[in-house]
Image 1 (cartoon, one colour):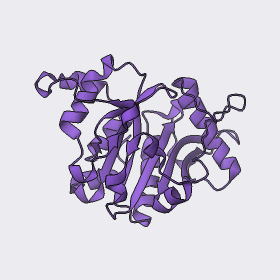
Image 2 (cartoon, helix red, strand yellow; image 1 turned 135 degrees about the vertical axis):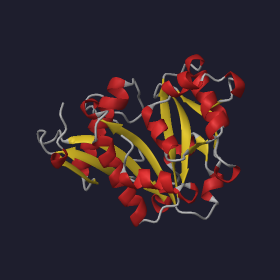
Image 3 (tube, helix red, strand yellow; image 1 turned 45 degrees about the vertical axis):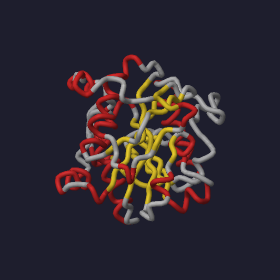
Image 4 (cartoon, helix red, strand yellow; image 1 turned 90 degrees about the horizontal axis):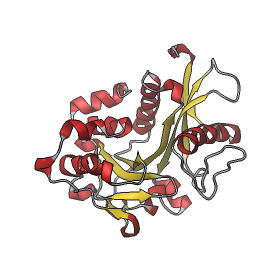
Length: 257
């Protein structure tokens, strides 16, 4: 469909109705398209939800041309340090040991549940979400952003090249290198660096992960096999102090769609 940017609005969710709209979109993408599930997913109401939703800020992209109740076409979950303390942990601590970040003394922001309605992928919609995220980060003087991003499916064989590429070329420096928890730890150095097929590896990397890499993002050590959500997760870390001027310009312009 043709996207008319004048009909877009990016804002934070402000109440229960907004949250349900975000959860409906997440259900469509993460459950309907990708086959995910979870203990609090409501299949009857078609809501993808969990216990952390009440602690996150929910950044929403709305298209006001759509019918009322169906205007949410993009969402992002955002959790800062204070919200994590209230929740008892960051969401991704179930999968990754974040101690190296939590003891760094730097302002942290966890990103998660990023998705777009299928009709809005490949256009300017993601740019609008990223512009909203950039404004949020700037206002709160965030120093390090992180969060899990997923490869669809749990069969490691087809993912050997892209996971190895991420490990060899984009492994985080030790001071921000989180590590996947042992119970579902998956080595990422599956293919020696000299045997990487870089074009094939990069083609297999989801677009959201590639967007973070274009900003100078890193990955933590090890992947995490998330069987309930039918995916393999990697932890992405972006350190604003390590962003080059070129990366910062890309980010601030939202030019990642």
